[in-house]
Amino acid sequence: MSSKEKIRKDILHMLRRHGSLKIFDVVNALKRSEASVRRYFAELEKSGLAVRFHGGIRLPASRDGVGYHFNDAVSAFVAEKRSIGRCAAALAVDGDRLFCDSGTTMLECGAFLSERLAARDLDNLCVVTNSLTLGSNLAAYCPVQISGGRIRLSRMDLSGSAALENVCRYNFTKAFLGTDGIAEDGSLSTTDDETTSLAAAVIEHSDEVFILADSSKLGRKSFVPYGSLSNPKMTLITDNMADKAFLNNLRQNHARVIVAENE
Image (cartoon, rainbow, N blue to C red; front, side):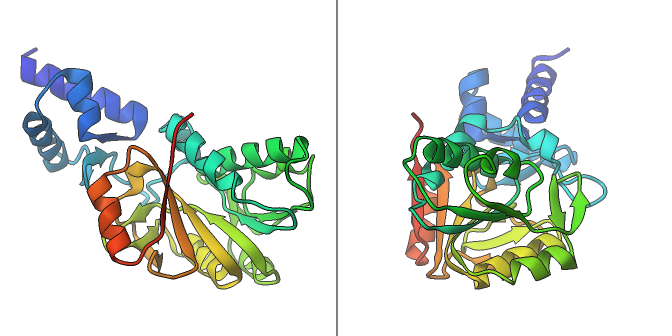
């Protein structure tokens, strides 16, 4: 095996393990120049094995067009998701009525909310969620309402008209939402119409909306747009590996951004 083939194989192994890679991750791991890594990324994209985004690459969407699976996502960017979840949970105050989205970053948020509730650092919280995994922990400490709807095992959530109708019954003081992509102009997108419809309804019924997105989501466009960070009620919470120039560009387009720091 040639040196070039070995490097390509190593990058693919890293990509399949983590789901996405930033350029500097590969530069540091393989001791290659940034220009060299960019060439490998371009070759992988040309071969259909990866999709480039701002500052990195990710696995391509699956053939069914969904491009997301909970069991794959849960092991990727664990430290970053943990820092984002902790930061989001710290924003909750006594008496909040929260909507908590599905997704692996939201699991971290739920764990920290549970810790705060157990320690009596937070009181009189009520949560509505479409997640199949979030409520079981939180329900021990506060009322949790499940949205209902059709089960989607790929996302471990509930969707469809029943979920949408139930969510529209409530008004939320805060909503914590995920996203599959954030474009350079701050537009948000997901993989499918059902996820988008639910997110748009939650935004309409919430006083404040926090978008929880690790840095791999930045510079990506998914299939269906649902909103923009230029909306004054929205705030992005991302991790400290996010590209600073990208975040500055978002701020110049009137987006509010919080960078969560690791412990």
